[in-house]
Length: 572
Figure 1 (cartoon, rainbow, N blue to C red):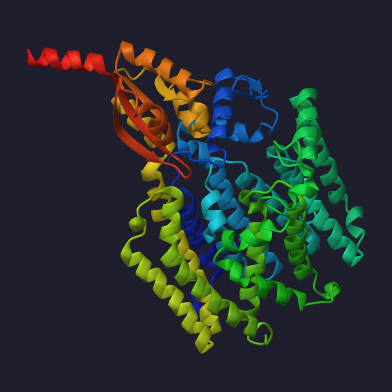
Figure 2: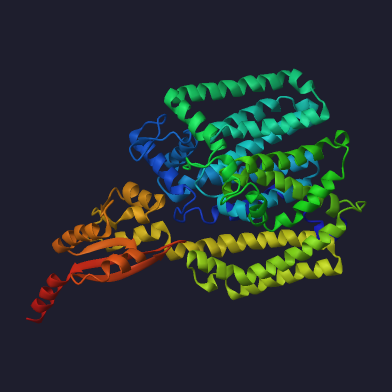
């Protein structure tokens, strides 16, 4: 790229500092906000229980052994909590550090395979697409797993493509073993599958005779063997057969349907093919171009690096699609591969002047991206309000106009055939999305009804801060995050009407209110269905919290007879 607009980005010295700045803005901006779903509260409870019991080998959850995940991730959370104290930021630091590590590792991987610019744009994908922005900083296992798998793939690529760096096989196997110790064995299985298909297609067996490769296999075996021996037979039996093997053929918690039936259910076998366009937005518009350019580099024997990236994308994507249980966060290990695919597009089309293929496809996709972006600016706030009950002005008008202008700019560049400028414009859209999500959407959602907001409002109104938080029929609505704040940080909550039908639960609540005025949390539906029509209760809604599927209200309840007596006494 010989124009001045790209000269600044072409200097490798600024790549790492610039990526770190972008990564910090993407992953650390909201580190201290309330825990809010995607198993953040569940894992926080497990970590709290582990630290309180001072047992770092046997995990417990609500009085029962917790065999669903191995303890390494919870050890990481505990380490940061020991260093910084209990806070949402400390719980999220393992994921934040891992997401930054994934960005930087993707950069070095792109630089190793193609060029520094391919690495830069590939790393930018990891920090500015929707999935990276939403899941990357959360206190969940997937960002840590993604970093381990990405580092393992980088180490293997470095050992294979640079003959003087064979010792990197040790790093690769150790990283993938750690990924398996963090979550599950597919952290090792998927990269091995990619490597196996790659070597088979190239008819290359020399790797298996490399001493460092053999030593890496032994090292990973020792790490995994020692780790799972430490965790005990009961854990191994449940984890390997219930958590891993059974979830390969059924959906978790579904004992009636097979994997084949799940393939055509709520999240069918092609589900990832639909959601990836949104999860990797706006960079997903370049995926077809990247696949096309790599496919045109055949025969594979002459283009091993392109084959490596192609297999990484295809093998991971097909393998994840074949598993019956699907979640958007499970796609995170694919983000670096997709980033390299996008980086390859920039490497070939933006910084090589001799490439004549793919321009027509790129022109159409850039135009479609501009149209989608304009539509998203118009409809996005409406959809967010519908799901999260946030105000329509969650995104300021000036920012909406700016985002709309960016979308129109992309359409204009596609029409005028200024495609190299259009590629730079995709990066601008990614940065704009990062600012919008981290600066406005996530804080706006939190301000309307986060679990910590509900906890803080209740605490503020309690006469005694050690009093239990009263919850009406919690089974109907309380999430893991609410439980963490109320039962673990606060210490206790009192569940009124637990497991009872409405009439019996109401009688139990009346017995409490007869004694004294009560602050009670419940869903708005429960309040309207059970409480509001009772003639003996005087209810005042103090605060309403909005969640994605239900509204929660904080209510002050008093017995009407006692209230009347109090008013009569005041008159006298």
